Image (cartoon, rainbow, N blue to C red):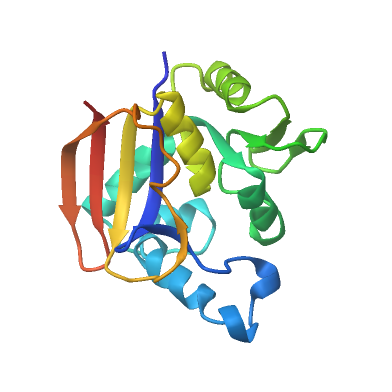
Length: 212
């Protein structure tokens, strides 16, 4: 059976996203710096050759262990799951050829037909809960793995269900001071993890945890 894993960027103080992160807040005085904070969090990935080629950003970019790690993460993924908030922001900001190239299952109360994008990505909208989304994602992924993409509340739901087997976290040396924390709203019986691997770079420390 395919594994269920999380692969995300995280600020040093434990936030997945800065306060006010949404396109409607772009440039507003109260949240004017969320774009800069997000850019700093994810700066490491923008430098990788595989990412640049995958999103058609042009040639060039870094090679090496981080690039290899990123390639492995993308290639192991046969389906993804995300929340409505993450999808809505991506719907207006992703390129026409969305970056997933797999089925993506969106947890939502909205009824909507599948949204097919060029390049192999199809978004399916799931109205009957996280368990149903995971069952559909597993079937679609086959012998590849299922990525819980986010946001934080969706990851928390799957942690509480006890189905996440691996956590891959790119811990960036920046402080958000507020936003959406990853490890909140968790049950006491949430599974425990052990460190499997660490890769240190100036832009992020890449940590991989396996379920204990």
